[in-house]
Length: 154
Image (cartoon, rainbow, N blue to C red; front, side, top):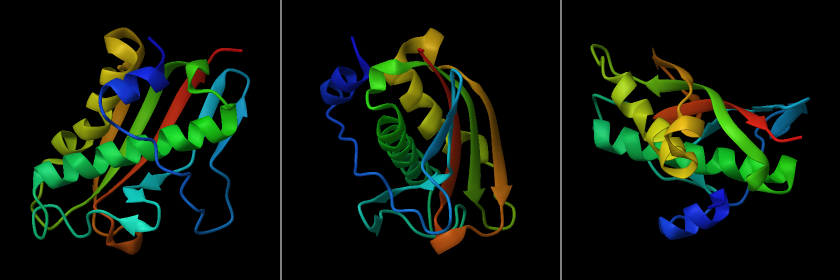
């Protein structure tokens, strides 16, 4: 089953490509590697969750925000590739979690993005190398920002 069909089966929707807030593009394809820009959990122009994990937001809200980041990455990938079925596998995910002092659960927040990649691509193609980092601030007070690298079919 293709990624687009799997997204529909899960009742999800790929949002429009997020607008760039500075001088960059959604992604750069180098050979079979697609480097996607960082994204936050915006749908259209709305940041669905806002604030720090461990203060204003729960781990579950951060998890959902990370899932939204993955949907935005898929929108970006489709814009660059033209077809999500060109995605061979997830290679590397870096998640930045806007954390209140003492918050140590960034890995469980970033699982929102990782779990969705596995749901969409399957265990073998969806599992990836990863880093989950606590940070003290993110743009627009977003709870999560992720950066994704994909291998694509030539």
